[in-house]
Every structure is written in structure tokens, then in C-alpha cells.
Amino acid sequence: MDVSSITSRRSLRVSVREFFYQEQVPYGPALLRITLPLVLLETLLPRWIHARELFSADGAAAPLAINYNLPGFPPEPSGTLAVAMMTALIVALMSASIGWLTRPSLLIACGLYTYLTLLDCVSTMTKYSVISSHMLLLLSLSQCGSIWSVDAWRKRRSHSHSMTGIPQLPQAYPIWPQRLIQLFIALVYFGAACTKMHTDAYFTSDQLRYWLMTNVNNDNPAGELLSFYPAVVIAMANFAIVWQIVFVFIIWKPVVRWVMLAIGVMFHASTTPLLGLYVFPQVMISSYLSYVEEGHFLRVRGFARQFWSELPVRLDSSRLAATVERLQPRFRVPAAAASGVVWIGILLTATLAGVAAESFCDPYGLRRAEGPFPLKQLDPQLAERLMSPNSPILFSDRLLSFDVGLDMLGGVLLTTQRTVHRGQPFFVQASMAPPHEDVWLNCQLLDSNRQLLHEVGQIVSREHLRADWQYNIPTEFPPGQYSLVLQHQGEAVAERVIGVE
Image (cartoon, rainbow, N blue to C red; front, side, top):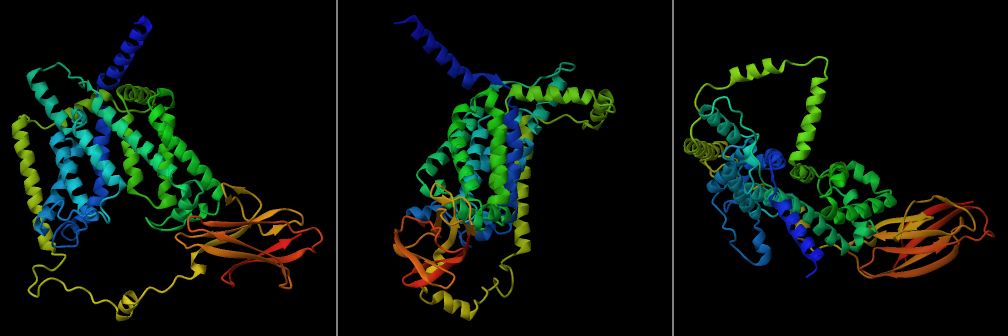
């Protein structure tokens, strides 16, 4: 066997082993452990009062497994048990964020969060909830509680009692749990790009334009404005898919890592004003903290210390340290077993307190003498309209736009025009909202006297969303106002007036 091949194999083995098993202080996982539970609490705290309704057999749970003909998976708990589980989940997330019994807290949070989201696929289960469940599980495999946590503080206090005067540095651990989180995020992006490749409407900007124009998530006024610029939308869509594809391959390069992450932060932050997303970008931006490694943190800390030392006015570090030391509690920290007992006691007490608080609030009137609150009667006219047969949708309601423009990109008009020059070719485009049946459309060109000058028809199959016509008004025609009329089954459904110069 060639010596060079043996050397290359050995170097590859060493590189892979170093990639997964080099020892570092887990700064990145610790930052992710602190932030991710706080982000999830934004969605869980408002749902706590509705836990009985969303996740229990007493309410209106919507288990995901019903879509796959698997009734009863997972089992729907009673209302009281659902409230207890929701309370325990909130306490576990808080405990994980401060790093108190970090691994048990993360495991409990991962299990309860996954269980409850499976019971409510309508609102609680989303893309970010699936991603968060995986990250909570992977964090539980790491040593993210070894720094910036109650566990680390306990360990440091115990060490100070047993070895007085010897400072204890942060301990390094194999980096493979952090690598798993990094690979998971990168592969999520790669899978999203693969999905977009099979969606033609993504590259033609149709899918993004519908998202920008609608308020499916939340209000997004900036998205409605951006929908008027399809060229920008197409450019952003293609740039995003290229970024998602190359992310998994080049994020490991130190030179481009921060550029890729900065682009990701801008991309996700822009989805708030453009698409009305709030929690999903926070989850994804928080996940970027897993790419912070020991060398990155030490460099940032060095810059911060240098900046702090150069400030003209600064606190005396020795005086600050003495103040902090005076504020430290003067009792011996209990052992790990005693701390675990205290943690379990707080978890159980908080859970029982949550159940009692929900019972006291009694949002559904279960403890009333008259019984639970009755359902509100639906307006008779609304009930009649809902129970009546569906009325046919007018074609004018399926028509999205009818525009005139000079240039096209990817089958989409780049800009719209109100005036054209004689002899100048221009495009007329009718865009429809999905879904629609196979239709035949006519486009008529009328002069200022409503006289028909030209008519051409085109079939638009159900898998297409646009019809295009190209016109060129001859120089022999007089300047003035001309009309373009779109017809369906002999009826005018849209009209666009253009000035011809």
C-alpha cells in the first residue's frame, strides 16, 4: 500500500477524532442553555392558563397522531394532570436556564415539551418546537451546566472549602455534544433547501409573495410593501437557498463562520417585519450560540478586558471583588444529594401550587354551583351561513393581479408600467391565486373609443399561476389612452389603462 494513502487515512482519522473529541470549555452550549428556555417560556407562559383546554381530555386537544390514524397516542391526560405537566415544564425550563441540576432539568423539559406539543398540533407544535425539542435533548448530553450555573457555583463553593486558596479553572470536556447541535442546525438548513428545490413556486416568488401579502402569522406591513417588488423577492429567495445549501459545508471554516452567522441573523430577524414571525427567529438565532467555541469566547473576553482597562473611569476590580465576597452567603453549600432533594421539593411544590392556582382561577367555571360555563350561542345568521352549501368562488376573486411591464425575470414581471412608447414591446401578465381549475383567458386591446384592436387567448392549466401576452403597439397608431381587458368566459374580470406616447 502506498505510504501517502496510509498517511492521508491516518490524518483523516485524526482530524475526525479531533473534530468530535477535542476538549474545550462548553461556553457555547452554556449560552444556548441560558437563552433557549427563556425563548420557549414566551410561548408557554401564556398557554399555562389554557393547559386544560389545549392538552387534556377535558378540553379540545388536537393530537398529531390522529392525522396518521393513531388515536390515543400519546394518551391525553386529565385536566388536572395537564396543568401539573405544564407547570412542571415551566419550572424545569427555568431551572435549566439558571443551571440548577441542569441535566435532569433539560431531560424533564425535553420530555414534557415533546409530550405536550404532540397533543396540540394546531398551535403549540410548530417548526421551532420540533427544533427546540431536539436541542433540549442534545443539550442534556453536554456539560452545559459546568459554567455560569448554580451547579458550577455549588461546585466552586465546595471546592473552596476543601482546597482553600487554590483557584479552580473551568473544566474542559469533549466537544462532541456541541458538534451534534451544530450539525443538527446545519442539516436543518440543508433539508429546508432540499424541500425548496421541489417547490417551483418558491423560485418564481409566488410562494413568498403570498406569505408577504397575507397575515397568516402576525401583522407584517413591511412584507406587504416588499411584495410590490418581485425582482427583490426573487433575488432574496435564490440567495437564501444558496446560503442554506452551503451552510453545512463552510460553517466550519473560521474565516467565513461569522459571515454566515451574521447573514443568518439578518435573515431570521427580517422575518419578523416581513412575515410576522416572532418566536421562530429567536429560536434560530439562539441556536447560533452553539457555534461559539472556547477560542472565540477567549478572544472576545480579551477584547472586553482591554476595552475595560482603557476606560478613563472604571470601578476598582479589587474593591468590586471584595464587595461580591461580602455579599456571598455565609453557609456551607449542601451536598449534591441534599441539593437534589431541595430541587425535587421545589419542583413538586411549584407543580402543586400551579394546580391550586389554576383551580382557584377556575377559568372554565368547573367549581361553580351552576356547573361549567356554557358555550356561547352562535349568531343564527352566521350559523346558517356556515351550514349552507359553499357558494362558488368568482373568478375575479381568484385573480391576484393584472399588470403591464417591460421586463420579466423567471416568468415574473419585474416592474409595472403605466405608459409605453409606440413600437416598444411590453408584456401583459395575469397572475392567479392557487388553487384554480384549467381556464381559458382572453386579453383584448381597446383604443380610447373602446374599439377592439387586437384579441388573443391562452389556456392556463391548474398547475400554472400566470398568463403572459406580449404586445407591440405600432408607430402608426396615434398616441393616447389604450385599455387592456382580461376576459373569462366572455366576461371582463380586470382592466388596465395604459398611456401610449
